[in-house]
Image 1: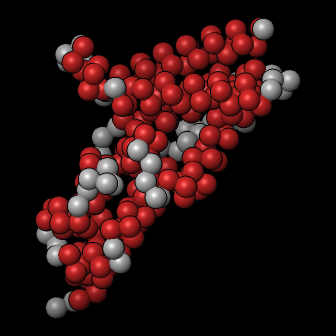
Image 2: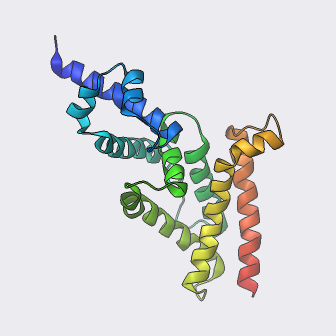
Length: 211
């Protein structure tokens, strides 16, 4: 038996199962037993490859962050010479797609969205390594729209409002689907929501700039 190949196969199966379970249940509710059951592995395999549940969660975050940003780059191809409003639209679309799309690349976005509302011990790591640099990217875009004379706090508040709108559509999907049965968040709807949030935000930003 090729133990190295078998170990690699087991680790991959655990990562696959853990990504799904953590994204669906969140870290506190996810159990090692359930992950092992879905992976077809035993608990000793978790200890061997990741140390414990925390080690597994960190490995999942790093792995699926890589997949997410490779598939949905935060700048979504933003070019330096593009207008700020187009940069804003691309940023919003990338953020929405990361948290609302289906499949592996979207798991990190869902994990991140969960951390926003129910932070775990890993949240400080995510803030410094992921959230802060990408929020700074958004504040740069918002600052360019408001003008360089805008106060930092006003820029931050407006950037937070943009993120808040995106997270609302993610977290409120159960409510929205009950208010409007049949409403789903496929690629077409994500594009529609992107355009809506962009228009809504730009109108607010331009009013703020005119004050």
